[in-house]
Length: 411
Image (cartoon, rainbow, N blue to C red; front, side, top):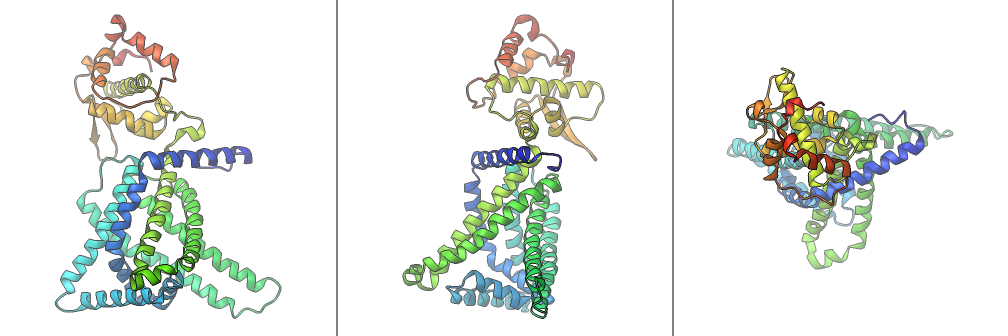
């Protein structure tokens, strides 16, 4: 989403709406439960994931750098890093041994693919995507993501390491050395932003705009970086855990780190969805509607589907419905989902286009027929807010208007 044409005041208003809309959607979709579930999945997949990371890092000669970053993350408990490194080394040794070479690789990939599948399902819930990837696509896409993403990150990290080591050889003239250090920090931050962009674009099973992913990734990277520094300081204040739990002290601390980290990542994914789909940021409507007002939107969406069907036009998708009704894509998805559950429309899958078509004879689709079908699909809405739409709905219940065919409604 382009903000260059907005004044500073409108930009601030846009960002305020974006943040408040993301916060509301985050709690509506109960992403806190999603963060907890992903924390559990991360605990199961952390050793296989680190095994992949260190196997690839070894090829780039960055294994010492990765280990140093881990020790930096756990400054008060080096024994934890030693234990974790031992787990990773044993895992890789068993994977390479004759007996475990097949089974070990399968278990390693299964653990990582399961974690990635859990992340995709959570992202799809945010984006209101009803269908996950097919099994074949999951295997291909997840495998490529698991192996290619670390490679891209390590190439960037290697460049950062090169800059950091080159700084020490620079003469301390004016701002040359501080400027080079700042450049190294900027590159490291850009790597983090780039990682989140890839995550937000490729994991949801839908098309994600780069601009929306970039904006939310920048915010996520800032908060994530602050949390990393805060977590390091937090460990220093929680030294009593080492006395109580001993060598197990890192487990609750690591779970806390995972839990908060997933909160941050999922909020960034929510922000990406709101930034791309929420028309209200450009002046559209997203307010909670009454049931009658929502049924009116369903009625008009059904009319659009019928009009395009009888005129042999491509079946409309959620974005088309959102554009025609001047609502958010999220609202359009809810409308189409209600029509689908009422057996009024169904989704078709084409080679180049997916969309919705009537599920029955268009000649039977009258106003009364559609409203009667919608009556069985309960929705929980706030008090009516659109008086003019309520009046229109009341009129539509009259004997004469109820017999009007949807194809005769002027759009």
